[in-house]
Image (cartoon, rainbow over all chains, first blue to last red; front, side, top):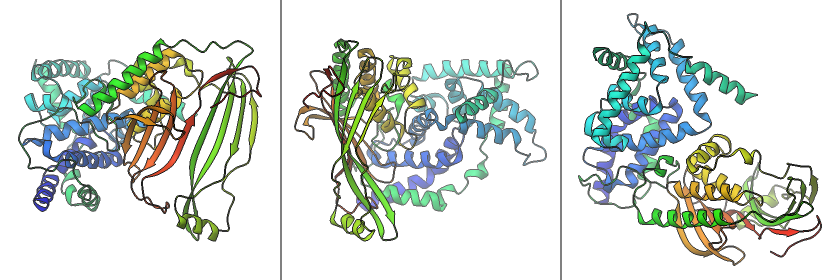
Length: 183
Length: 334
């Protein structure tokens, strides 16, 4: 039984680790992402009996909470800036890729509230929606659809008017925060 | 509507993580090492997986706190009890009046504490436990005196003592320190600016006062306990600090316990494995008055540099009652 359980868990880990790591990488800096992914699977092991048959929303729910908590830590601003800076300065990996447009979208995304970001990220990047997304976010399915509708509308608004930011980019605010921190 | 769909498509295309970044990640050494560490632990309840989804909020005693648990808490009996006792302490704290401190009087607080010192030498790594008596006299304006007297160090295990000897018996404890401080110096920094709404307070503590080396839950637990043990913190803030503690996921109730000096109190604890070792932070308070009686940090598993079997108390603070005295030389009984 012991061996079976461990073997099953090992298979479970290998099946879902990439998705959980990607989830974390989208939300925190790479070093923390690996830690949070590992913590997520540690929670899963400790609660092995409770992990549902469709485990991904459950895993995302755990990772989301661990990540949200990490982002509240002092490293939050620095991590956010380094990610945004990396996005803004990265050279195009594919010659055909429109980096400017991509950065513009990401900046518009960052200007949204954390709640809107979470909702949109789940749908756009994790491909999780409806009931599964509601389970990840810990809300009802109805509440999720309302959230998604509003978040999508706000993202569209941010991207409207030929991509011109509606207000100052968060990056500047965050940089000031770091300067203040470093003083 | 179409622009909304278009925005979602554009966001999808702007995914900051490419599939190549994570492809094969589970097989990489870091992930495999994490998997081995995880499987080195015993799961709390080992049973065949079942389909039912039990809970949306995962409360865990692993390294990271889930502050979201404040609003989405798993209905676990253990946690409910911790929440109940801490909420009750919050009510008691809120109902307590401020200390009736005259302008020419002092609050006196004695703390007996033990800290651990781990030293690395070419002879090996050893640890000593250093006791210290700390007496504080503080006035309304935050001025006063701190007298600190170190005690005789002890060692967690015989090997620690041997390694200390081999290292040439270096002096471990400092000397007696007796200093007076000007206005404001003995009050917690910017304590008056802290919000008294629990969530806002938790955010402020996490932002400004939590040791970033600790998992946030543990850090929040420690920061709240530290402020609660300060003698001149307003009742409303004390109440909010207890509510913050009540909202921390993974805080366990210990029931009625005795502090290291033998006083009866109510204990709560949080356990973390973030520094590579399982540690438990314990807070003991007086259920009648909400006064903090003691704090302890206990190592629950073997740790490099400490040559003794766990559990080992590596830090402790035993607080006396805050008493009003008339001069910087007057003491109150513990």
